[in-house]
Length: 225
Image (cartoon, rainbow, N blue to C red; front, side, top):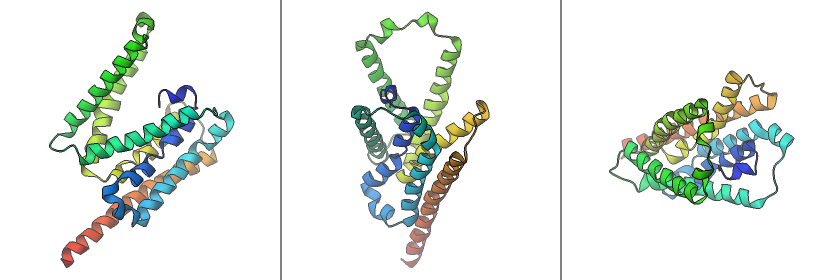
């Protein structure tokens, strides 16, 4: 994603990555029967994607994007890989706490980026003295809240909730980003963006309704058994 954003607008990338719940739905073979037989799950995933498109449509229409095919392919591979990795973590990693699981993942990612940066000569080209204190503070914030707290919470939720339900973060992230833009940067929301926000909230509602419906059906079957 970081590499692709050099060639594509961040708004377009946000929409592309918001297709993650679709990949979770298609790749979660364990719950195929359960997910595809639940109309609320299907409605929630489809409506959420439409909401994200509505949220960023005007920005994309104004800026456009590169016709380069490679960044799009990279984004698609990254999205599928993220979904597969999450499902692997949910079903295959057993007997390990969520904090240890997420710690190993982040350490592996840090090692991979360190090696890549070394071979790309990024450490020698970096002007360390020119980095402002505010940038270091921003990095520290991301480390604590974005990784240690945020990502660990994601890994924990994967272990206790359905993958499709947890994947709705891909719809909620753009919503939170837009609302923070309004509160902090005093951005103005257009009617279409407001509609997109409402649609996203509806999608999350439907996916959570699907979970409640599944629990009711399970309880009814257990009572009959």
